[in-house]
Image 1 (cartoon, rainbow, N blue to C red):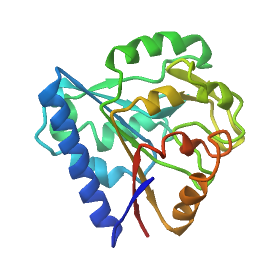
Image 2: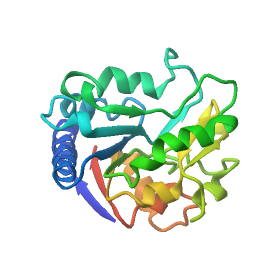
Image 3: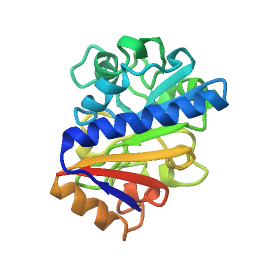
Amino acid sequence: MNLIEYPDRDLLMLDLADRLASELADSLRRKESATLSVPGGTTPGPVFDVLSEQKLAWDRTFVVLNDERWVPEDSPRSNTRLLRERLLVSAASAAKLIPLYAPAEAPEGHLEALAEGLVPHLPISVLLLGMGTDMHTASLFPGADNLAAALDDDAPPLMAMRAEAAGEPRVTLTAPVLKGAISTHVLITGAEKREAVERAAKLKPIEAPIACVLGQATIHWAE
């Protein structure tokens, strides 16, 4: 596990945005397109604000969330809504969003169609993940109903996930997709998450799902 400690959160967000932009630019120089996968939630918002202004070939960049709550885009709980407000603006408005939601009561009947939109753009070029204090990442929650299947090397690219801590049903990228990323970064802040990620490094993914990527990830942390 490679952990970078920053003196404050502002510097963390600026440096991380610069790293993501540099890696995307490198991928776009070498290939016809690049795929960026990012978390929802409010923590990465400042990274998105900086990244959205970068002069990249956004029209050749595909963006997919790590996971999505099964709620309409107009819901305040929608990660897609946050993405459209904070990342897919300014220069980055030319990027193409790969959806993880369809208008239906439950995700199970739509996973195959959603995966068809994702698979042509794998592997992920640049992956940014978050982590909860329970050591979940994406919607791979400890104790979730489909966690063991989602961690399996033969898991499909997308799975539905339900967990007590998740609230709504979720659609998540599975472990093989996350582990297949060319470059992986994890953004965490605060002492509690620092302790959690260090604990996760000693546990199995079924206990601490973030552990499935720690061997290849760069962890970016500030108090």
